[in-house]
Image 1: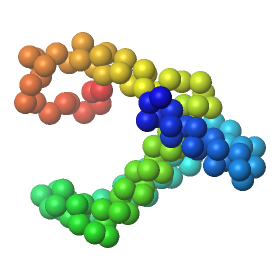
Image 2: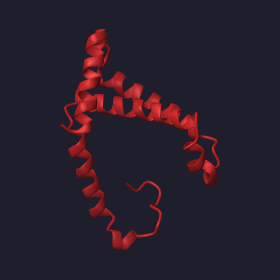
Image 3: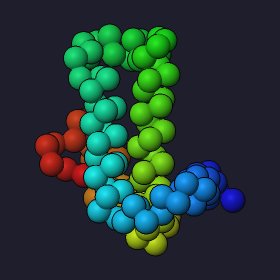
Image 4: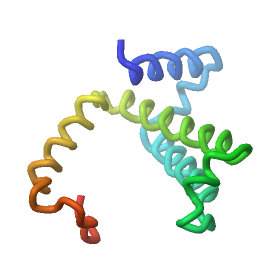
Length: 117
């Protein structure tokens, strides 16, 4: 079983134990995901770029960031579950598409241009 499947199953059990499944339609889950991404961004918003990596490794910020990242992945996995998307396979397919679109030899060392994914 993959880590994503373990997260999916734990999130399902958590919701079922609380009878929260009825609140977990795809739109609501997506909005919760956006909210959690916003909370993660808020923790990093005003960190100076040249200090961010070091400061994000220090407590208590490290734990707060890990908590928000956990919320993001839980909601993302839940959304994939609701939409019957194999998130792991989809991510690997997306990486392959991006590799074909942006060959390493052509872009190595260059920052992606705006809007390129």
